[in-house]
Structures are given as structure tokens and as C-alpha cells.
Length: 490
Image 1 (cartoon, one colour):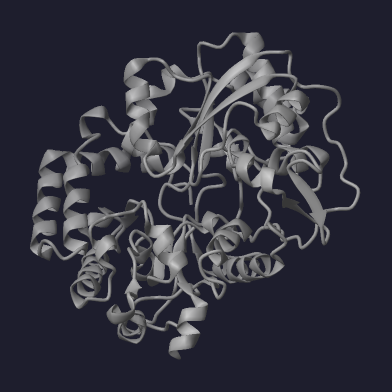
Image 2: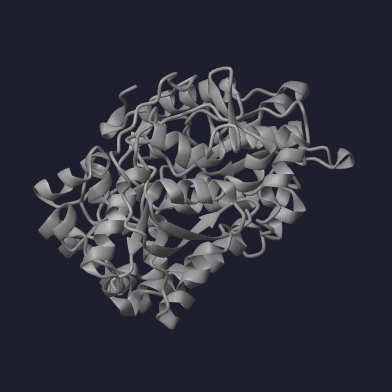
């Protein structure tokens, strides 16, 4: 489905092709060994004696030593790596963390891939060449390509607000939201503290979209750049977040910022509405949740506007996750890693995709009803890791034989792309001056206190004044200069 702003929904498949084709000839690796570091939300599989890792590494002709790390704290662990200078050979850095990590100032640690992949050079790697240019563009810094794209999509959204359809139906509550008041009304309908259930978990930052907050900067009617901190929409969003926090409709653990147990709260039905990433809506989620509650049915609200006006949702760049190769690797090692990346980027429907995502047949998975389903061994050993090094164009596919989840997500995404909004400086990697790297932190800390009802809205306004004095106004001029020289990416 084609939508607004060049957005388009991902292809959806209800069964895997009966005769997968091979897209890579020969063995891509040359026997090298490379240490990787990637995030993982879930149980970390064993590294030794792992049949899945062994099967993939054998096909690669190289050894990738995967070192998955807790996704909840992954980004916070990266500065220590930078400080130590002891980076892995292949490192995943999500695009949304670029500013927090001041990645623009750390690029000298990573290999410039421009000479290897620019122009006709990428033809050596046909699966990488098949990834859309918009995804590659988001990995470019100062005219040079550093990032290998993961999960590229023309219909990518960071996340939205999910609900338990089964709980809403049991309560006689409607998921149709025409105004922010409709969302608040669900609080009373769904909260039953006697039964140990609250309506809401944490909805931030996805609560910002209904209030029309997209990206860090926007332009007002006169064309002046305005930071989202300075907008009336941010005040409205924070006031609403504080309103539900004080209403008693938000789970106490969510108010205590206990993010580690947020998925369990949603799975077990302790909360009925929760903000989260769209990547968590799949067959693995449904399988894990139904073990706790057989009635579990995750859905996402249709994109709506807080005011009842035009609805919008921020469109992510062509790719929002990127991996980087260590600059210390030799030319031969970089070429070997790119050949491996080409194998990992094999598209859905190929033999390589089946191996990378599901392991070895009859060991890690079996074909059931036309789709690969993990065996007990596969459930213990197969986890997302290679996909955070590079991935083919996104598709919506069946996991654990749960075809309805694919249908549900595909339908939501097909509707959401109609409301896609490209924020200012879309898909552009901009390295802010180092002296302003930390001025947002005191604002973000205050935002957390305000939306959890611990501080008044005036505390946020004061923090924004401080932000301006510490460099916010200078940043505005910096971005104005970027806009005049390079445009806005829209």
C-alpha cells in the first residue's frame, strides 16, 4: 500500500516459498573471525554448542562471535566501549541513539565503506545492492557511507500505542479513538485495581504523535525553526501524560520507570494499553504472551489526532538501525565482512534467509503449514543477532505458524502509511557541535518527572529556558545553516 510522504507498507507473506532459491554462489567468507555486538530483547542464547550459530558460520565460511547484550540497556553501554577504545569488529548502533552518543564525533573509529560500495562497486554484492537507496542514505555522514542498514523499510515507524483487544472486548470498550479524550476514557473503563489491572503502562514517547510532534525541529508559520520543546503541542502532550499519571489509571511500576518488566505487564494483562516499538508485534510476541494468557491479542490503535483533526505518525528513515565495521580491520577483512553482509542480506524466500533467520531444518525448525516453526532446540538457540548486522528489505512474515498476526500488522501498517509525516531533516545525519551534546539531558529528565506527575509543567518550562541559555538558541542557528545549505530532507 502506497501512502503519504513516499511511505509504503511492507510486503506480507502467509507462507514461505516451497522451493527457496540460492542468491549467493560459493562461500562468502575466507576463514576470518569477527567479534560482533548487538542488542537483544529476550533470553541470551548459549554461545558455545549452539547448533544455529554453527550452521550459519559454516555457511558463511567465517566465524562471527555474536555477543548479544540486553536491549533495554544496550545504548547506555556503548559510551564505555568508545571510552575504552576496545570496540568489537562489528557493532550495531541504532539511529535513534546517534544524538545521545554524539556519533558524528566518533566516526573516526569506523571504516569508511564509500570506496567499497559506492557507484558500480556495490555490484559485487547484489543483495546489498537490492536495498533501497533511501536506506543507505540514512547511513551516510558528511558525504561518506559508514553504516550498513538493518530492517530497511519504506513504511517504518518507530512505534505506536498498543492495546489488548481481548481485554477491551471483555470490558465492552471501543478501540476507536477520535480524540485524546477517548483515550483517557479508556482509563476508567479498563482500570480494576482490585483485580490487579491498570489501563495504562508508559505511553511515551509514542504519545507525542497524536499531538503532532514529529522530529526534533519544525518550522512555524513564519519559517522560524522551533524545537519541539518550545511548542504548545509538547505542553499539551505532557499535561495529558501527567493527567493520566495522576488519575490512578497508570500501573505503579510504570510510574516508577520499571521498563524491564513492561512486556510482562502487558502479556499478563496487568496493563491493557502500552506504548512500544512496532518490531515487537509479531508471532514471537504472540507465542510468548499466550503462554501467560491464551486470550492474548495485541493490536495497535489506528493513527489518530489528539484534537480530532488531521492524524499523523512520524515516518522513520529508510533504515533506522545500522551496523559499523571497526576501522582497525584491514582492507581484506572489510571485503570479507561485506561479502558476509551480502549473504546476511539475502531476501525473504531465499535459502540464505531461511538459514539466517531460522537455522538448520529439522534441527532448529521444521516446515509446518508452509512456514518454518522453531523446534524446542531452536527456541533456545535462535535469536535476533545477525539481523542487527545487516538485513534485507523488510517483510511481514509468519512466525510460529501464527498467520493472523501477519494479517493484523499488515492491515495496521497499510492504514498507517496514509498518515505518514516526514519530519524536518528527514534521513539526514547531522553531527551537532560537541559543546551542546548534553544540554538536552536536563530537559529530558524533567520531562520524565512531569509526565509521571512528580513535577509541575512549570518545571518543564524552566528547563527549556535553561536549555536555550546553555546553547539551544545557538543550536537553532546551527540547524538554520544546515537548512540553508543542504535542505531539510523532506
